[in-house]
Every structure is written in structure tokens, then in C-alpha cells.
Image (cartoon, rainbow, N blue to C red; front, side, top):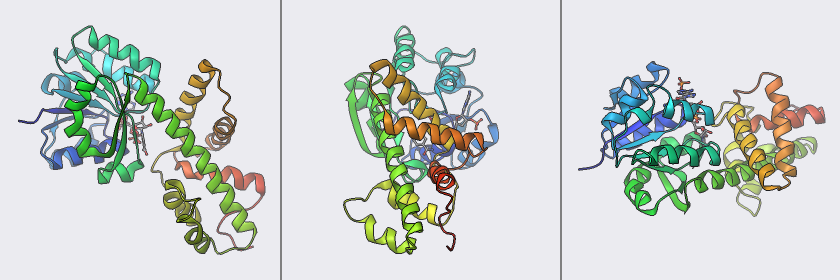
Length: 298
Ligand code: NAP
């Protein structure tokens, strides 16, 4: 019989991930701070719990996917948090993107109670969560990685065991450096194309399949051209990830020139109240500097 899953955090990502766990037949206990977000999943067969501790008391494998480091600490350690519902032998998997250092501390707190932990942050956006094609970067014990594999396979495609606990989060930060610096390139290129009077859709068609191709270009390029700023991943969350990158880089003494610049460009957009737009709205900061708008007739 398959293990019982508990899932905490039913945001943009959690919704699709739980749907895919239910689709392959896992029993799934769910909890979300804003309760109505549980309703569509209850209709699909998920079982509502009353708190993170209640989720943990029913499940064998407890997954969290909430926003930031303090939020994971909150759902794990608060008075009705996961730690008060777990039993020895349970496996806790945090799939949020948070600090590698705090991840290692949380794992120690669970280990003291005989509970295993993996860090398994994800990439692939809301589309990947909905389609079950996420990339999952996993840190922790190899035996627990194997145990979690059926659940990971329900949610993702590229599932990589990258090292000890915390290594998954560090690889995820590598991923975020690549994402934002690529998005900076996509925005700058489209602005250049606009200034050159090009047909932007034809331009994308011409360059997407070649050496310059990337997920950001294929998926977010057309959204920029349509001026569709709906988030797959919000600027606020992207900024949080870049803060984690810059903190870790500072500790390691690594200069982060491109990432640091994008961090500051996103800050300007946050100050203009655009934090809930998609991370591809980075291009708006470049437009402001250039005095030029993509998609406008010149
Ligand atoms: P989201 O839509 O903003 O959802 C955040 C979830 O966390 C919601 O369920 C929210 O509950 C919950 N939450 C936040 N703070 C909480 C707290 N203090 N206590 C309890 N619950 C709390 O975010 P998302 O896009 O699903 O992202 C979730 C995680 O996945 C983040 O770490 C993000 O960086 C990562 N991620 C996202 C993407 C993406 O493309 N969206 C891609 C890769 C990784 P409420 O509903 O009550 O607000």
C-alpha cells in the first residue's frame, strides 16, 4: 500500500502538485492557512486537516510548499506545527525555496525526534506543477530519496539527488541565478528588437529554436510581447530567492554582478507596487530606463 502523504501550502505550486499526487492514487491530507483554497482539492478526494500538526499525525510523508524561510519555520515549528504531529520514521520533505542553512537546522530538529528530512525545491513554474513536469533537486539521505521517489515521480520529471541535506536548496539557487540573468537577456533583446522596428513574434520564432533558446525565452518571451504580466512566479517570490542567493554568495565571498543588478531592478518594480506581477515583468524596469515600451507602435 502506498504511503499516506500530507501536504501543507496550496498556493500556485501546491495546487497542481496535490492534484498530481491524487491522480496516481496517493491518499493526501491537506492544510492551507487560507482554508477555502482546500476546497477544489477536497472535491478531487483530498482530506482536509485542521493544522500542520494534524496533517503530520495522519501522514507518513509530510510535504511543505510555502513561501519563505520564516514561513517554513512557522508551519514546521509553531505550536500546532508539523513537529508536534510527526512520529519516528516519518519523512518530512520541504519543497519550498528557502535558506540552505535553516534547512539543515530544521533537519536536525526532526532528526532529534527520529524523523527524516529531505530538501526538494522545484523548478518549472505553475505550468510544471500543473502538468507534473517539475524539476526536483533533492538533498538528504539516499534511502529516503528512494522512499520519496514515487511521490516525486507524480509531481516531476527531472528528479536529481544532488547531495546532503541543504544541497537541494543550494542547487535551486544556482537555478535562480540562471533564470533571472536569462530573463534580463530576454528583456534586453526584445527591447532592442522593438527599437529596431522588428515584428516581435517573427523575431521570437526565428531565435527560439537556435543557440539562444531557453525556457524563459519560449514561455515568457511571448507573454512579454502580449504584455501579459500574470504570474507563473511573482516578482516578490523571485526577489526572495535572489535575497537567498546574495546572502549565500556573501557568506562564500562570491561576486554576483548580474544577479545583484537584477535584484536591484526588481526592487524598483516592488517600490512601484508591481511585486505580484510575473517575474518576466523585469522588462518594465528596462523599458523605464530606455523610455521605450515593447508592443507599442513607434
Ligand atoms: P504562493 O502561490 O504565493 O503560495 C504560497 C503558499 O504558502 C500559500 O499556500 C500560503 O498560504 C502559504 N504560506 C505562506 N506563508 C505562510 C505562513 N506563514 N503560514 C502558513 N502558510 C503560509 O507561492 P507558490 O508560487 O506556490 O510558491 C511556493 C514555494 O515554491 C515558494 O518557496 C516558491 O519560491 C517556490 N517555487 C515557486 C515557483 C513558481 O513558479 N510559482 C517555482 C519554483 C518554486 P495562503 O494561501 O494562506 O496565503
